Image 1 (cartoon, rainbow, N blue to C red):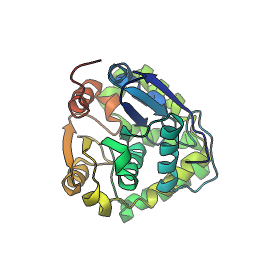
Image 2: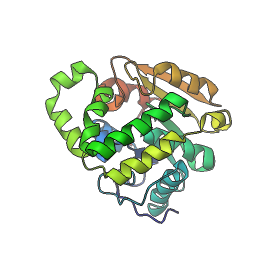
Image 3: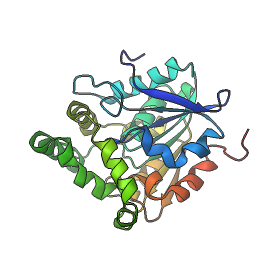
Image 4: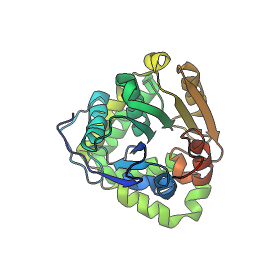
Length: 261
């Protein structure tokens, strides 16, 4: 179990199956607000803030995905959950893949959204570039570039309140937390393991996502032992916020959400 006690909360069906939600870099548990009420009708929903994000503590950087995976299992252990399904976005999705690779007997299903599984040179360099911005301008300097990839222009133009809320949550990310997660991302190396991932996994891509392009995620689904792929039209990187209804429809059948308790 991780030595760090991360912020988390459990809601929904106290006796139901467990669903763990993992946030993306620069977000908090609040990113799942569009789906929370629906998911709580079927699951005991455990939401957590990644280390260095939201209300969680910030260990010293750098971090590895082994660290992030241990944190997530630590949250499950503290809630007495021997098994769970896991849904993540971006960094959270990569952590979910690591959980399935490390301990498949504990993971029922994975929903992997807006992610990749390796770190080619261009991807690796992008994290060094962002760390330069962090050093020069702090967390606030990273917000415009993040927003530009997260949500489509049409969504940004018509949802100012959502944008303001996301910016507020983004600025809760500590510089050390961002740095630590960026160091984990630049060393991402799960693609070689997908063929042995013995957990049903749904890969969900946004059609307008430049950070985790649809063709990248389609290839991940093909490489996985038991993978499926769904493309959400007119969605950027934070798919569940950008296209909440389409995203909810895409995950319902995969999670067995056909009849509420």
